Picture (cartoon, rainbow over the protein chains, first blue to last red):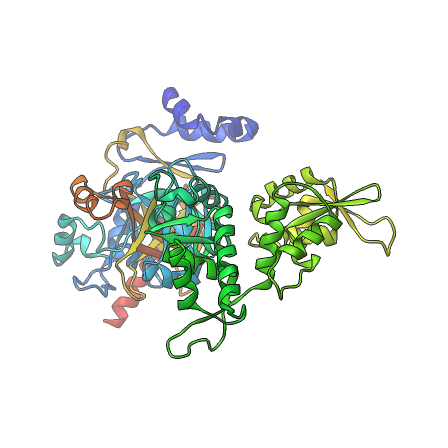
Length: 461
Length: 145
């Protein structure tokens, strides 16, 4: 008896001793009533442990109200979950352990928003992650973290009668006049908790890292790399993002699918092909606002670029013009900002420059007809004042981590104080579900405003 | 790796499971530990037409009510793919070789019967209390038939 008590009370002993008043009560139960065959249960409710005895009277009564047939199932008796959910007023049903009762660790409970149910039914949901990562659940367009929420309550799971059915039971049920013809339900498992979903931002940094392993370069064809290449399925396998988020991230990274593999193209290579395109435009006297796709791609292919790369170049630096389909021809317009930013990046790749020198060189480098403006470089460069001189250097938002904590720590590493005007381009792409950009600022920065009408300054928290 | 969430229930036909939830733990005496199967836990009773319930375990009674869940719960079952199945898929799709598990939706839970009161002892005279409740339906049924 004493051993038995120790065993079952071990977790609760602290509580029990704390509520010493209860001890006499417990003592009463445990010493007065002997353990015997017809006293199978103890309930540990909160800190009170009470023995429950199944009395013969109770058992007898259980059998009594079973005559009315409430079942809607074919066999004429209601069992399982249907019985529990459909208990008629003024009646009762016995609850027992299922013949297959056990831990059933392969059964999981997942709490899901009602609006995601159609996605479940149409099988558009999957769980993604590497074995060492925390799994996420992805719909077509969103990513959710999965949290396991445990409960100390006893959650008895009751399956419907046609699931986990045992043959023997089925027979019993059909036997007329038998007691088991009555509604009853069985508990298959005690659920230790449920899984809940929290919407999160996709883990895009990993995509960036994977694609940077082996960018597409000039000497691609002579040296065959086969490491660091990823197909769509490989990316889905490794990166925790929904399909839509993945596609948009690939677009932001200017990635292109070449021979079935998703690649980012080496910047120098892109520089080469863009210059070639601009040269061809000059030579052929094409308009930068209406480039014939077939002509442009044809000329680039003649110059030794692959078809896919030539298309990719148009995609990265231009956009299809509206109503461009004329007699099956597609027309493209080069995007001034993107072309100008490209040249600014190339210039600053060598390092910090005086702002006057930079502007001069930049204006000279961009193709004729394009006018540069410093505003184009929001989120691309920072200006540093040293004495009376201003220097400009490359600091691209696309090179920064995409999760807010790391983003802000990198930003404050770069500069300890940020004006709103400077900071905004570096945080506007951050999206954290359930947190506004003001919320982000509140969480990661300290805002100071020396006087009421001066600009606020942000420092690290 | 990717684990697909499979669902074969079709439109709105997911089998509905039920939850009976109570605070604390029903503990089985060691003598019964190895033969839980089919062992009766207690009696779930609906004393009136309202969605309130009692759950009688031995001579203790819990009272509670049926509560719709704010968000539904899916019952998922892990399905291990057999090695043979993986080998077959291996040729055309190397993705399948890494994912050995599928999750299948086998049910949905929309409501639970929650007992959050402390057990009330029916020690002194359990018989009349229980009898009163369970005898009621009999008389109704008898009248009806």
